[in-house]
Length: 336
Length: 253
Image 1: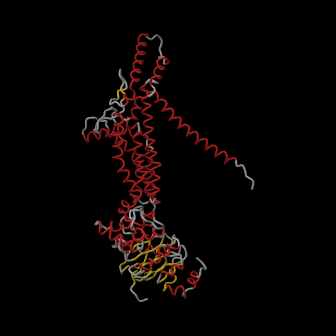
Image 2: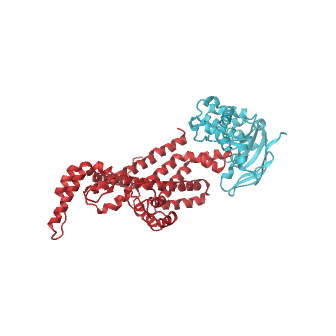
Image 3: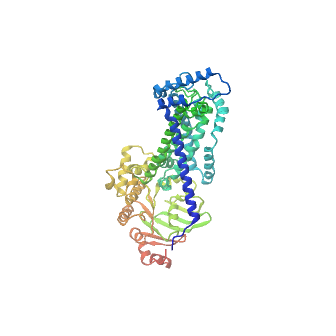
């Protein structure tokens, strides 16, 4: 009965542990990187001083020295304006990051993100929830086993394809139907986004409904309730926390999405509550501008700051959905 | 046994897919009596019980033949509304299954889906049902408590109250006390004794003593067949068939 050394088991365990550890570390490092790049906007003074000394502009052959001096002057001016009131600037109402006096107001981006996200959740979730109710409670099991994976596959649909579809087809179609001025706007973007939200809300709602123990519906049916009464008065309320979690995750998905919104919303940072006007979302801003900013500049840091915001918001939403709501769901079945 | 039969089963067969689960059952169940169904696991007694309010309809691949008459109506006939049938034939399950709602909502659920909206009327039904289920005194002060927060025995009586609230005539009980402690079991048994004044009760049980204590007539099932059906007293003292005697004496099962 002496303890045996099993090599394959030992190796498998160590390998799995190290892979898990590496992915954990990589995620942490990504967070650290994003936050570190965003930090300079809050500690602008020291950074600005450093910048003017260290940044050497690239020159190609014989550049005119006057121009170089001018641009260096410019950058000094820029950084000094952000020194004074970066935070105030971020609270502003305009997003005009390029110009003599760059404005980094996040308000229009926030409004844009919220608008599109709400539209997508409002359009997508009723469809998704009703579809989930139907598959979970009314569809024969054989068909369900076939349909559910197909809808789940939609979740892995490349978002650039959905974006392209929205850009080329949906936008024109809805403009013809509603006759609004701007072809690309929050409404079209939100509808396209709902195509990506539906599979997520659907699959989690379906899981929540299927997790409701069978004996609840048996009890209801034995009392002479119809299938619909059982679905709406017993199973739906019992699964409510799970459905709420599904909505939150759908919200998080829409909030963080870049490509669909970059392609279908028109990308104008306007603060308005008209859903037929173009919008610019937080994520699309990063997608559109990151390739063009000067490394280390305030604009660059602001984009990373937006990235951190997105990360924090989606992290909070997902954390609520995962931990709080699921725990509540399980408690409900135990009657605590 | 020359009383009126509440439930009358004639040449009843039931199949799960191709497997025959009930073979040629003929039985008359009498009004305002407690009929116990006993037999070893897998003998078909629960299946038979669930045939009486067509809960087997929910299971895939179930086919039946023969007739079940309740008040002389064939319940498997095409023009019978299953929903109405189940209001008349209530069911208590082995595992107590109150809804994850308040005690009040649990009992009021049945009347509500039947369209009763008047608050006073609902209050009255809830109170009466809980009184008849011998639970009122224990819960009258916290009607908003979650039904699942009650003890096992209280939960089972809550389920009985919930079934009574739709005013059934027949109560089917599938091992209602098998998951309960002895004190709760006694309470449920006393309750069954009370209820038989107004309801026809069919109870499945694994517990011989329980069958002997609560029932008036007993049916012994074995391998999907009804072996013997007679007065409980006779069944437990001088059964006709050897199989019955062996089972009751604990030689198998």
